[in-house]
Length: 431
Length: 188
Image 1 (cartoon, rainbow over the protein chains, first blue to last red):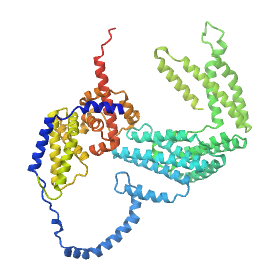
Image 2 (image 1 turned 60 degrees about the horizontal axis):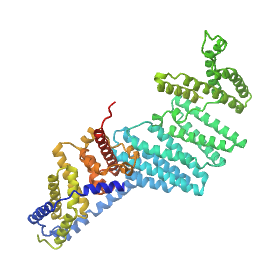
Image 3 (image 1 turned 135 degrees about the vertical axis):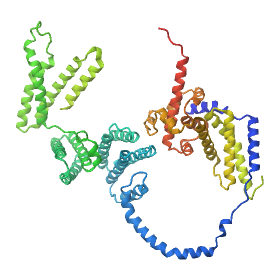
Image 4 (image 1 turned 30 degrees about the vertical axis):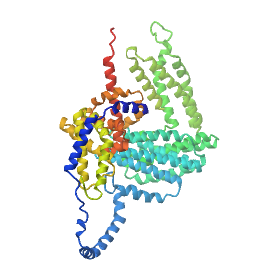
């Protein structure tokens, strides 16, 4: 930069007025000044209004002013902050909302964790305002830039608060980081591939990348995490009870399913803790806490509900039974395709297609694994069932990967490979 | 040119500003207009307008930004007269919206100019739209900072940064094309 600047200045610096051009220009300007001299000072003219007249006028209006002032005072104190809460960037009352209302709200925060939550909420508000303006077609480039800047600043403030908190209370800092990360996940999902709010979306994505990186640096203790999960679970059920009547049957079913998934995850975490597997327990509870917070956002924020599917925000966690059923489906498909091929494999002239080794293994092992999983589930041993299902899934995924590689067609190699991989990924991810 | 008490100070400050900034303003105008004679005229008009402002009782706190502001306005007017185009139409023609600041993440100005040949950049400066030339001239020829430029062109610092980025990229592109055109083609 310095070098470019210097070089650029060096080449352009040679462009100057010649001595004669400068002299001529100076002469012309001096001539202009001579013909357009500075006027004499007119100070004092405006002072001609007599003090007496001013005094009379003041006395006449003083009472009215007091009355108007009292009314205005009441209006400002009571009505303006309420009205300001609904304001958006560009509105007259918007500065009241951001500089007065929010500052007052901040005064009532009594813990560093609550401060982070509040700052996260402010960031969410700024983004929601931008989305609202964009939806109404009123988001100007200037506002977008300002909001993007504001989001960056707010995200930075949250990260700094988390760092400060980490020094005094690592557990609370880790919990605050989970909250912040969940919020950013919701916001990222909301923006999706939106282009009309691109720089705000970028600000959110950048904040999310930072939050993702930071969240791995500290994990909360099992006990404090369990307590926070307990508290949040109570809240999420309360929210669900309050929206139950307004939600559609489909929404209700979906939310119930997530609540059930969360409960199951919490139970698995408690079991892992009982078994001395605290790392796993904390990971499970952290996931559950994040899901609870996203589910609360879905239930309480109409913008989220209208623009993001619950499947995207909080994907379903399959039960062992559902996973076993998926394994069975996949297995029967493979069996119907390859089961007869095994018997005709030796008849090379009729059937030159050799059965892949992985298919032989699947046909031999997966029925036994399914049997183990099924009996384990019947006996209440979900852990053994999970192990058997995981192994069966691993074999099927392996088979699908081999098949996708084989299905590559040389003339359209890249497309074929891509389609194959995607297909196998989709199948694998369905577990 | 005598005036009321204190007027002498106004005159002195004005003439001092002329001596200090005449070359810089002229350089700015030349690189914006690519017309030496017209540049001199606009510098003259700039100083006479400022003098009119002073003689109507106003005080200029800081001459540099004020002079640049006046000159910039005159250049914008000149462009309107010449081409009958507005900034918006230029941007529209270029297929650009200035709301897209993501390109600011595509590299800092330092990175973008690191391998840029300054001599070539100066040469191709007149070939890029004035909306970008304006900020590049203000940044690299007049040495103004983003905040000063932002005040001058009445755009946010972000918009200014985007224009500087795009301007540099356009220069780079022009230089690349010129080099390609000069490069002998390999016969198969």
